Amino acid sequence: MYQRPVRRSDRALDASDAVALLSTATYGILSTVGGDGLPYAVPLSYIFHDRVIYLHCATEGRKLDNIRSNPAVSFCVVGHTKTLPSKFATEYESAIASGTASLVSGEEKRTALIGILEKYSPDFMESGLKYLAGKIDAVTVVRIDVEHISGKARR
Image: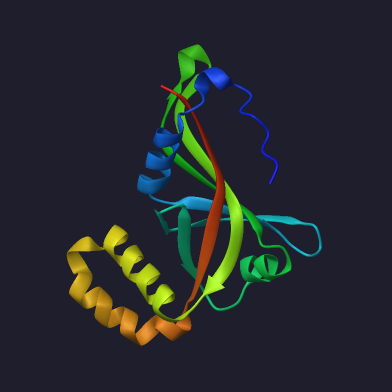
């Protein structure tokens, strides 16, 4: 997968900082392209571990149609931001991962959903696991095998 170099190399995050941001951001934007050639981006909750992003969604919809048609995806997260009005600028940090998406099932699906519970509801694991047991067949889990990560920041 070809990756264009970061244009502002002076603002490029080193690999470990980009991975750290991808690991800790609250949400990300999944970008896909459909069989019709039209782009589609949607914000989602997710987890990132060992160069894999997991996210969950409904069992049907545009993002799944697009992934089935073209599994190449991009996933962007944004961390800290602050506008600097008098400088006509913004402090920011962001990371972009690109890779190949696929749907998972079985134990991998369950493990990913438990990871999402741990990230977003760590104080409610017992009730979260009960909730999950009744909903696991009502959701789809997407796995993104990350092939490239880059990041930029102005701090």
